[in-house]
Amino acid sequence: MLSRRNFLTAAVGVAAAGGLAACAKEDDSSSGSDSSSGGGGKKITLGFAQVGSESGWRTANTKSVKEAAKDAGYTLKFSDAQQKQENQISAIRSYIAQKVNVIAFSPVVVTGWDAVLKEAKTAKIPVILTDRSIETSDDSLYVSFIGSDFIDEGRRAAKMLEKVLEKAGHKGAVKIAQLEGTTGAAPAIERAKGFKEIMDAEHKDDWKVVVSQTGDFTRAGGKQVMAAFLQSNPDINVLYAHNDDMALGAIQSIEAAGKKPGKDILIVSVDGVKDGFVAMSEGKINGIVECNPLLGPQLMELVKKVNDGETVERRIKTKEGDFLQEQAKEALPTRKY
Image (cartoon, helix red, strand yellow):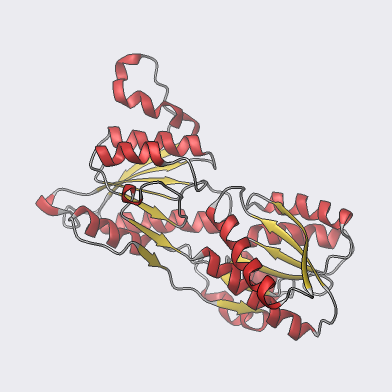
């Protein structure tokens, strides 16, 4: 259920710390029986602070979390931060005030979390990071991280581009435009880092990123920024997009400029959403590095273990694959997001 909360007096005490969460979308849901509970037979309450709904990947991730919580019989308190860190911090403080059993969140950016996570630790509420990592002065502020290795995704994208260039019979300089994710976000930083690592080590003489800018992980952002790229650098022949939605937006601008995506400009992106596979099956995207958003079931298993006081791994990776055009049509019917 969506609601907007206004805190009108100081009498709300500690709950006033969550006042800024009125900017975010929140809903509470509970379902299932008490059989999926922590020690003592009491149903687990999970507070989950989502980044937003900026992409098809994020929508699938949210759906997975909500469905898995329902299947596990947990009470889920969910907040959509609309890509604003202050909204996430307010939501986390609200969960602390509500004394949830476990807090999980996918951080908008990597820094600025220590204060609120110290509050959670003081309240003895364990915190799990999902999808995105953080930089912190105290690693004990969270118990585990579940998600992808974004640096490795960047490396995989570079190796994917090698295959795409070979298949296209490309000779000569590789002039790359890079559509970055949200500034300061872990996937944006690390996907760029991993790609550059391979490029510098193996393609220093022939590959060059000629232009790079954030498209904020959105289709509209990808379209707008790619249009600007093509005006300033009309000889771009490769696009590396940090997610499929930006690549899909960029395709619109490429076609508007009279060029053929997937041919005149070779495209490699990250995520693996269904719309990306459709574009790949049409020859408009050349390769996709998968980043699996269906973390819900794994997250609920982890929440149960953490709530029961079990020792858990600090880093839990998701299973993913890489796909080229010839694999797209075969894989498309089975894509779940």
